[in-house]
Image (cartoon, rainbow, N blue to C red; front, side, top):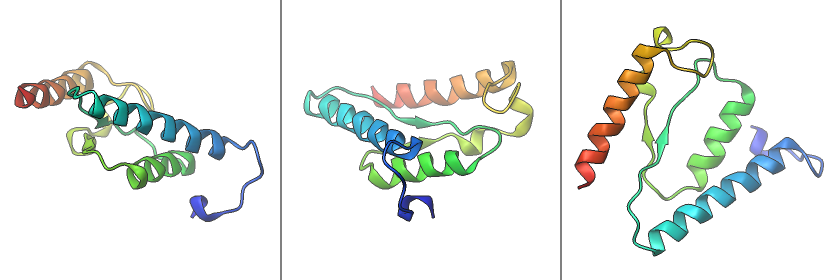
Length: 104
């Protein structure tokens, strides 16, 4: 598992770790300010070793609810490995809209 490997200083993994920590600190700031927000996870079409590292790092450190959109997507909804086509955008916008409406 990548998170347990000893990595040289300045690696992309350290940058990912720092970025995840910064993002989570922003979520904490929003929570302390009593702001409402939603966190969505939208996977790419193909998962690389780096994608898995980012996913695990974020999910393992977060105490917030993360709405995983994986079950809402299939391979036909992508233009390439990360960008949605019209059908993909429609499906994801419906999912996000439903979650927003449930917040109020």
